[in-house]
Image (cartoon, rainbow, N blue to C red):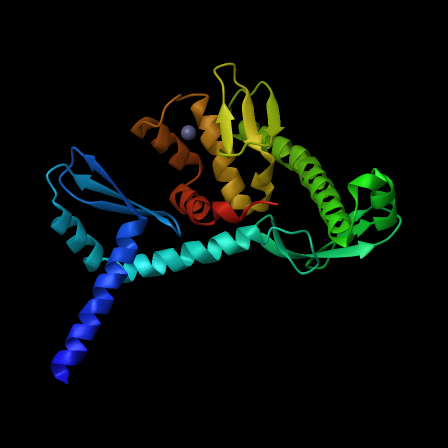
Length: 264
Ligand SMILES: [Zn+2]
């Protein structure tokens, strides 16, 4: 009986391990240790020393199986949350680090406003549907997609307007206080970066930054301002950042952990 149990368990273990192996892409490098990165729920990247055997790799996977299971679950959850990026009442969106619930209301005014912990979006559904070519809309699902697209565009515009005002003003404020010379501030829809700067003293910031807490926003602005003096990520640069923004490590980590949520 005991033997039977053991065999069964190890069979299961092998199966679980081969499940993990299927997800892993091994990249052999000039390194002495292993490094595991869970990129998505179906992709694990394993940086491995060149000389590592298949057995070594299996051993590493087995040893970290529990951790990997947790990470894969986390990624799965994240991915479903992102897929749920729909513009329906009840969905959570971020603004200055707080969560707000979307409330979609049919109304004639096409307004967007904050009401307590809600962001209310008024939509004149009839107008949205009537404005399109009728042959494009064959069923209810189509009109639903149209309305969702309409809300997404308007909400994005609303965020961008707010970002233009807030981020530009805050950048000027911080630049003046800490004596940085800024030329032009542009608020853009950057996909992969929160901010960037040029040798001509121009600063670009991503409009989605206003979804982050104000401390984190300050950190990103200060980071870019400091690049106007130090165009690199040297010790000198980080010391300059720290002298103006002592909490920068926490702010940086906050973005690392939560940045993916700051989307529409
Ligand atoms: Zn930088």
